[in-house]
Image (tube, rainbow, N blue to C red):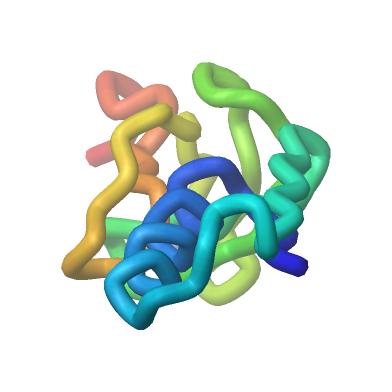
Length: 90
Ligand SMILES: [Zn+2]
């Protein structure tokens, strides 16, 4: 059984299929409620969050308020976040 964010389990299912595993043998559990890793461009840490894209989450590492996005970075292995209230930052 595969469980996790949709993008993750689809990738895992694709790998499994290449290995000869039939789709019917797999149970894909897409959990929209599963934590998503948000990448912090400020300190390069990732913060798990249950919030949907467009909401704010505080970076667990540097405390920067990050606005979450639906943009998943395979390179980072996380969803990209960007600093919220940029105009207030100096
Ligand atoms: Zn950070």
